Amino acid sequence: MSEYPEIAARFQRETAGHQMTVVHDDGPYRQLRFVNPKNGLYWYEIVTTPGQLVFSGDGDSFVFRLAPDMFEMFRQSAESGSINATYWAEKCKTGNARTYSRERFEQHVWKQVDERKQYYRGDLRADVQHRIFDSEIFNVDYEADALMAVLDYSYYLTKSPDDRGNWDTFRFRRVHDWELKDFDWWFLFACFAISDAIVKYDAGRSAVAA
Image (tube, rainbow, N blue to C red; front, top):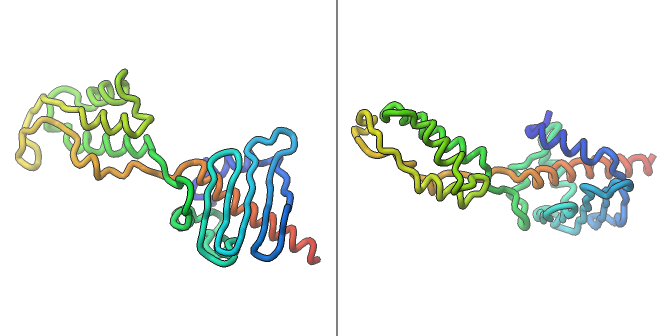
C-alpha cells in the first residue's frame, strides 16, 4: 500500500494509456520513454548513465546520483509496494523535491492558536481566520505572503497570564523555525514513475529472455 495514496492514484490515472519505448538499452546506459500516443499528456523519460538517473517530462526534471547502476539503487531501496520518497529525495541533486506546503503552514498556525487561545478574550481563532486566511492583503498559498501574514499578526485582548506568567499580546512564536516544506506532488509523481518504469523494464527483459 502506498504511503501517498492520492499521488499514487493520480499517477495510475494519468498514465493508464502510456506505452513504453526502449530508445536505448546497454547495461547502465538506458533511455526509456513513456507516453500516451493519443494525447502526449504526462509523458516522461528516464535516462540512466553510471551513477546517475535523469527523470524529465511534462514538468520539472530531477537528477538522482549515487550507485553505478541507478536502477539497482531504486530497486533495493524501494519500500514494500511503494516508493521511498525520503531516501530518494536525499539522492536528488537537481530539482525541487520539497516545496512550500500550505497544509504545513496551517498546522503550525492552529497549533499555536489552540495552545494559547485560553489566555485571550474574544475569539482568537476567528480573528486569525479573518486576518490571515481570509485576508485580502496576504495570499497564504504562497510562502512569502504566509510568513508576512503571521509576522504582521498581533492580538491584544489578553484575559489572563499564560503558562509562562506573561500577559503578552498574542504573536506567533519562532516563525522562522517552522518547517513549511513538504514533498512536491510532481516529485512524488516522478518517484512513482521511476518505480513503475523499472517494473515494466524488468518485465520486458524477462519476456525477451524467456
